[in-house]
Length: 320
Image (tube, rainbow, N blue to C red; front, side, top):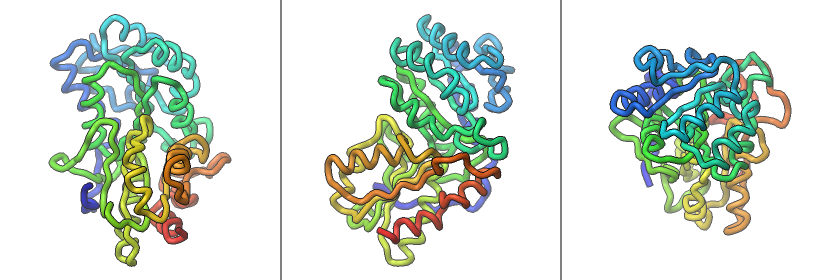
């Protein structure tokens, strides 16, 4: 258990995608097997510095997401460590069969990096939103799914993924997200959620992933000020879900609130509900995007409209 962090009010200018590039560049300098592949998206992926510094470890496949994944699988079969970058909306749909067969079924060491995930593309609408990727990729046996919450956790995750030989899908947003942790204090254990706040007598547990973790922490602090004890579960490891973290809290809480930048079906809320219902029934409120094309607007406007913010989480927690 860790204390709820003091959230920085200094705006972070580094998006999680840049943290991935920086971490891979450090690894590539010592390991020539690290390879980056893009689908005409090196700018969007913040991978231009990598391509410039390591041209012999970089591959541009153009707008061909299926080829992107299959080429990555071929490289992995030859002993390379490929990181395939593409907008999450396309990577999780157009190349779904390749992710299923060439990566997961063939057990290849391919890391799929879905950039500009969720509603990052905002005004471009449903064609560019990825509100189904958690459900889709999690349904593939042997595929892991991760949504890191800030740049520091992103760095820790990529460092861990560089050390294993299994496939994984990592979803990050487009814009910088405010820091939750710091370079000096970023608790991280692979495939284990980070639990923040009061875990002994919490009235409510807020389970969040990705960009929803920071508003979850803001909500927990506000609830504490109102006399409602709350803890936050930073479930960056959506698959494999840290069931132990959920079950350790279930006997102590009145209920769970899950928060995700995803459709209401098959994502974090569904997974948490399944675990809770099967083992220690508690009420679970799932905050998610609607089962409909979302409004046109930037990420903040979309989040505020659908209650994916501190105020929405507070309302849900108090209803428990």
